[in-house]
Amino acid sequence: MSKTSLETTADPATNVLELSMQQALNRALDEILLEDPKSVIFGEDCGQLGGVFRITDGLQAKHGVARVFDTPLAESGILGMAAGLAMAGFHPIPEVQFDGFAYPAINQIVCQIARVNYRSRGTLPMPITLRVPSFGGIRAPEHHGESLEALFAHVPGLKVVSPSSPTEAYHLLKYAAARPDPVIFMEPKSRYWQKGPVDLADAGPRTGAKVVREGRHLTLIAWGAMVARCLQVAELAAEDGVDVEVLDLRWLKPLDAPAMVRSVQKTRRAVVVHEAPLTSGLGAEVAQLITAGCFDTLKAPVERVTGFDVPYPAGDLEDEYIPNIDRILNGIQRVLEYRRG
Image (cartoon, rainbow, N blue to C red; front, side, top):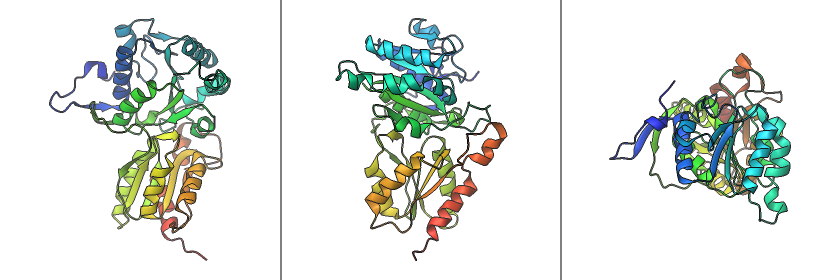
């Protein structure tokens, strides 16, 4: 088992740790439990085992079974309990073991968690942070890899966020857990073992999108695991003289339209990349916001490079489904070569 953040200490001179995303999330949860006595963590195997991805490793031993505990294999029960705990004044942080397992709990998420605050006129807030290991890339069986951001983002009352790196995972999870609203926290499970520096004292903004690579000729827009892939693409495009900007949306609900517009007004071209199917994917909403805000400056229609309009496949077929470097480069080429009329 890899070393968790419970066993790591920051450099006292810089307050920076080198952590995997798994370790960064683990450390964030540990600190949330320490700082917020009303917070509780639960889900299938979240207690003694530490979760299937070991995100909650060591937390039950440190904080006790009343704060970190296992549940039956019943997602509707897990999310129904989260709603009840929130009504009772707790700050639940439930985990759905895999994103595809969220489907049995859609009723609880949409009809209870997303609406109780509205129905009660604010007397019953829902400070729930639902952790969902999301997207593909680990060659898992069917229903163990999905891309559900458009489904969640469509629901009034929910906020949706997806970190792309260890430092974003650490800071965004702590920020999300402090919100009075329900937040769907979509963790790119293919990036759990990616390591990077985490500045524990970073006071940067936690809301909105973030430019992770400056560029002049085109903007790549992505979230979650696709941000790292877009950064790879940008490096390859630079070898051909194409200077690509990469925008990490981070928050998928609410979307940061001003940040998208600022970037695309500068580059005048945009490609949106996501793992979900093309039709009615979140990329369509992103493209509309860019078009509305940059209509007079766009050199080409906004391109989308996405998954296909089929069920998210299992195992080896993921490689054919998930946008790869060549497909993204082809999308960039189509936008750069577009000619009106």
